[in-house]
Image 1: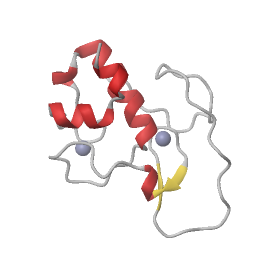
Image 2 (image 1 turned 90 degrees about the horizontal axis):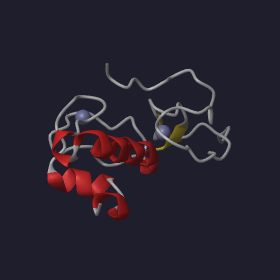
Image 3 (image 1 turned 180 degrees about the vertical axis):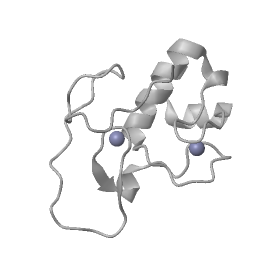
Length: 109
Ligand SMILES: [Zn+2]
Ligand SMILES: [Zn+2]
């Protein structure tokens, strides 16, 4: 079973991705370039998302940088760096992709 992103769980309810830091309240001003994260469900600025998840992804990322880091970190621990796939299209992350998305500390273990 894949670890499915919980879409309609209230923010900050615990899930097994580890602690999610409280997000600032949504701005009520509708803005161009806002995107919904499929993991935390928050609408965020496009700048809060990675440019791409893997070099092979052909889609815009819909997982915010913060959640992507949690994903990569947990996948690293469970599977190792060479078996991490994009949570959206299942492309395998290359070494450089993993390094870009995992925190230095995590990768160094
Ligand atoms: Zn998110
Ligand atoms: Zn992808």
